[in-house]
Length: 101
Ligand SMILES: *C/C=C(C)/C=C/C=C(C)/C=C/C1=C(C)CCCC1(C)C
Image 1 (tube, rainbow, N blue to C red):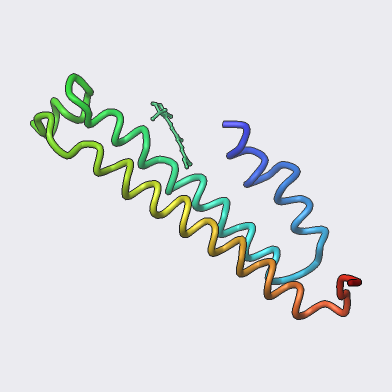
Image 2 (spheres, protein in one colour):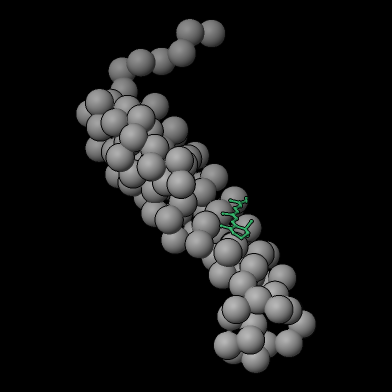
């Protein structure tokens, strides 16, 4: 809940707004969506496990419920990382700041 808070209205989003950089602002908003929608897959997968509410509701049985976690990890680790990478590369290119060697 704290991570959701800081990504959507707290320090993380405030810092991105203060950067006044469109790529950083849009990128951080995208990351906030990952935390809201992408992370929701884990508890949904959890509830699909044997004995879970959704398992009973959908009559799933025990097979392949961990598929949820693999899909969630692919989205939230690979996708999340690519968004962070894109923010870093794009905002570095567009700024006059260059790291000294
Ligand atoms: C790379 C791994 C990530 C981003 C893992 C995220 C995991 C969660 C958001 C897990 C949430 C759970 C609940 C909200 C309740 C049921 C148990 C969990 C641990 C699946």
